Length: 82
Length: 223
Image (tube, rainbow over all chains, first blue to last red):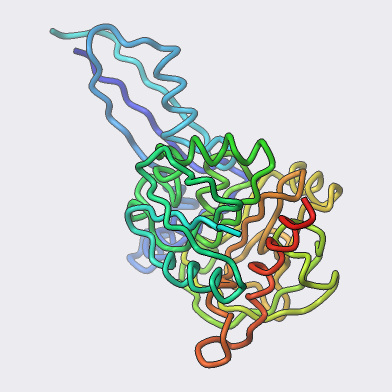
C-alpha cells in the first residue's frame, strides 16, 4: 500500500475570502508580518500497490479539484511500504 | 407535460420546485439521484439545498450521482434542464454549464429579495419574460459567487450566454453581476436565485418566478 497526497488551492486569480479572513485574524493577533493567506484542501489517499500516476492525476483533476477555479498538486510517495 | 424534480441527499427545495411546476400547469415527477431512471419526463429541475452537505465543493458529489449521468446524456440530446442554486452548482460541476460557484466574497450567507435583469428571453426556461425585463425573486446562498477565467467570461458575454444578471446590488460578489447562464443551445439554464420561491403572492415577494416554469411548457409545445 502507498500513500498519495493531493493539495488543492484556488487559482491565483480567484479571490479567496476565507484566506483573507484568516489574514485579518492574524493581524488582530499581532502577526503583522504575514502578508497573504491562501486556504486550500489537503487529501491523503491510501492506494493498493504501486500508485498509478495517470489514474491518480485523473482523480485529482476531475473530482478532488475543480480545474475551473482550482490548481492541484499531486505528491507521489518516494518509497512504498507493504 | 411531465417535469422531473431530482432529490439528492440534502436537497431542500425539491417540494417547492414541484409545487411551482404544478402551479405552472405541468405534472411534477419525483426523481431520485440514486436511480438510472428519468421516467420519460419532458424536462428536469435540479432544486436548491445542500446536497451531500456541500462536502468537497458545493454540488461536486451530486454531479457524480448515477442519475446525473442520464441527465447529462439527455441534456446533450436537447432535454431542457433548470438548475436552481445548488442545482446550478451541480450543473457547473457536471460540466453542463461553464464556470463555477464558490464562497461569497463577504463570507456571509445572503438571504433577501433580489432584483434581476432578464438578458435572454429565448432560452427554454425564459420565453415567458421580455428581454430587458426586471424581476424580483429571493436569493439565498453562501457559495453563490459565480467565477470563471476572464477570457471565459468574455467568451460567455460575447455568445450572449448570460441569462439573468443581478441589479440593485450584487448579493455575493459574482463576476460581472452574473446570476445565471445557459448552455450554447439555450436548453440548460442555471441560476443562483430561487424562482420557485416567487410563485404565489402569499409566500413570495412577487410571482415573477413562475415565468421560468411556464416558459418550458411553451418550449416543449414548440419543439
